Image: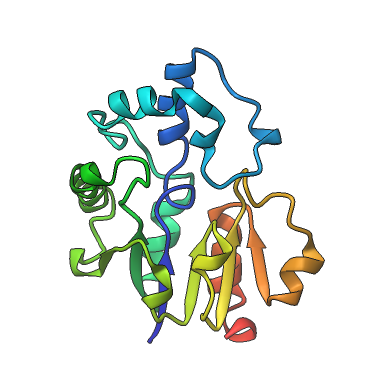
Length: 190
């Protein structure tokens, strides 16, 4: 059975961090103009104050799965071994990573009841994961896979089709496209 590594933030869930950031700022930043993977970099000299408050917030307390994610993953699990692989370390407050790990685990355990918790992988270095298919919003996290799927996010939206084609990367915008790609076109892609 082929294996799939699926990222969590901005692939399974969306908006958790940005909602907290927006509440802190008191307005919604113009995400269309943010190119950096680390959206918190827009805070500049307010970053330390933000993270002093953020460290105590459960970012997943009110999080939800993206539309169609649950059903598509459940369907995929009949044909593939699914691993959820997520980074839990905040580069600004590394010492509080354990709290984030616990919150991520609890969210995954409750929301993805059909995936064995032994298939939850918490690491800051996804290059060590060897799966046939990798689905992530960050290009460096999908390297090494036979099938590399880039989930569209604010920080990768400007990558051109030509740039992605040169690296054999397939872009998807939602979970219905993943279903089409990995279930309906299974024999063509793999």
